[in-house]
Image 1 (tube, rainbow, N blue to C red):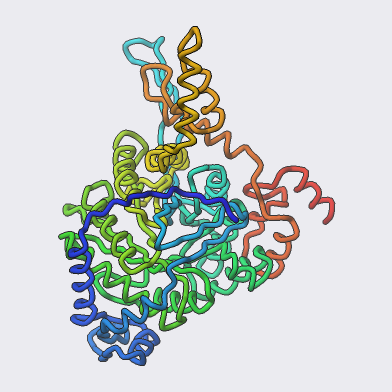
Image 2: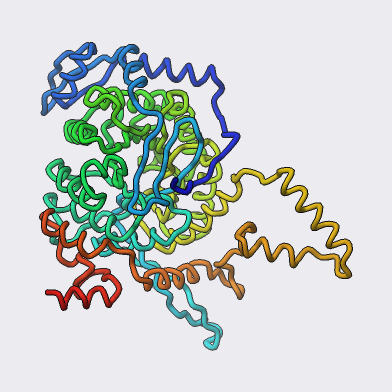
Length: 530
């Protein structure tokens, strides 16, 4: 059996009482009945209509559109069909995640597709009033993300103990990446450099089958991939408020038909695309996710889907997203409760900072949401590593800091080890210490430290009177990236490059031109073979 990752929280945090949960459920059903959904995908309208929904064509849009009114009966039928347990597979068995709506085990992952990659560069500054006084200060530079950055992020993620799954954190924007090859390069860069579960969205529906073919080669075949789905997809089916858009709806229909786990995601913004009031926001996002789940189960009954809640709040002067505000936490905890009410694994959100750079603001905003949303018990928490500037930027040093901070959160919510056996051990220790001349527990504590049962000292502490945390994370990043990556076996890479078109040659780790090469002997062996 795979070793359980994540953290099991018990008891779980409940913000809503049972009457409030049932009220939101009823409000969501009423929204789905009236006004209903504005659907821009013909097949979705036809599927829903054939299942008993009221469907009426409407005009006034650039594309064909239908008003669709979904009944409670349809929702209930979908909820009976959707599985309570979903497996997210992985290249390495110990990294497989078992999501269970009845067990509040929380897994943390990265995400999402940021456009900007932040680089930390230490620079030396000299005090104007004292030229002999120098400090090293971390400066920040921003640039567009590349496929090499995504490969490095996956290699980093492989080494972060508290990262349980990898959701691609950076948008690849190389000049030779386009809509026709983006997905295969995105998934290969992830799958080749981490043995953890890989999750991503899909840019082009035409790339769906090549991506699945790639995963089947790695898993050992089509049947093996369905037993161990080492990839899953995220699709934002709904454009808030209450609209099923053509492109992402069609992608979702095709994904579930291929029996790959799919996150049915909705991300309304309280104050602009959803009511800002808690009851209104949660009722609307719940209605939107339920609509996606109904459609997924009509397309393929029993399809493995996750309740994907990404509710945010609008900043009212710019209408940008806000993640570091208390409402963000309220919305998310409520959604976790709604997912549990329906018996669905929940994909939730925490760890995004509104701050543009690592620092006090970023840490405060991240720790606030980690600490508040984790005990509500979602199955997955995404956005948890390295995200800054409202999901616009990814910083690997921030991901390293986040990894440590999430470890603290996991330790905070771990189950107590208060048993008859541990009590007897402690009683024996007390008697031994009191019988000694020093009467100190230090030697016994060190043993627990070596066993990993005592949380270690913060590794990014300053030695002087300046904040050195980011500099120390920067040093740690270099250490991680210098280690040999855990690439796919040479034979698997060769088969993928032969059967899946469009992957950039510089992603092949067994060439000297690779953006992140395999250990040197492996590269040389491949060169000799050719």
